[in-house]
Amino acid sequence: MVTETSSSDIPKHVAVIMDGNGRWARARGLPRREGHRAGAESVREAVEACKELGIGYLTLYAFSSENWNRPRQEIEALMILLERFLKEKTPEMHKQNVRLHAIGRLDSLPDRCRNELRRAIEATSGNDGLNLILALSYGAREEITDAAKAIAEDVAAGRLTPDEIDRELFASYLYTSAFPDPDLLIRTSGELRLSNFLLWQISYAEIVITKKFWPDFRKADLHAAVEEYTSRQRRFGAI
Ligand code: FPP
Image (cartoon, rainbow, N blue to C red; front, side):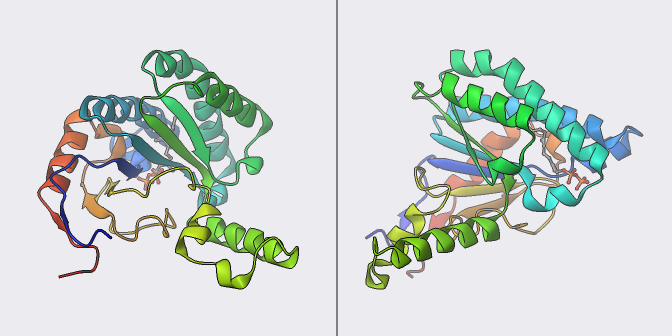
């Protein structure tokens, strides 16, 4: 069992709370959707930086369960942006050997967006480079509730006994069952919150907060966050 590591190794999995698009736009007198549009460019920077560093998994919090409470126009703008991003960037992702995944309550997404997502996931499914995981209509409490419900159903149907439920089994019912837990969580725009993101999976992740708004986030910022991560000691609860 791992009790202590120097994290001088590159993180296997980086997760990002992309925050500050709205404030970035407001500071420029632009509508919020322009902040999201600029934020989509930063996604490309983050993907390239992960590829340069040899990171295996990058999870991006692109739309939370709570984001459904935003004004209808902003939700529509985000869904159109996502659809366009998937349509336009899939060939480039494919060329870069990126494999796309999505986690969240994807059934809630508009049909067009869901179809584009399915298409992009299928088109990149044979790639074995960076795994890019988009968290969409995602909330950690919803994910944990869904897992609990599925486990209860399996117990009720006699496929599982309560004694078999342990950490590993529970994790296998989460949306993220195919991925390792994030080693590094980055949040932009200086906020010190987890915002219902990967609450189970980030139990032992190192957290790096940067004051930059997401649309200003560049490759060098991801490199700097990884450098900070490698300078830390990870003890996983031991001394
Ligand atoms: C948070 O900023 C950001 C979001 C709610 C959406 C994130 C979406 C993108 C970066 C663009 C699209 C993504 C992809 C994958 C194409 P905020 O609006 O909460 O900013 P604020 O806190 O300053 O208001």
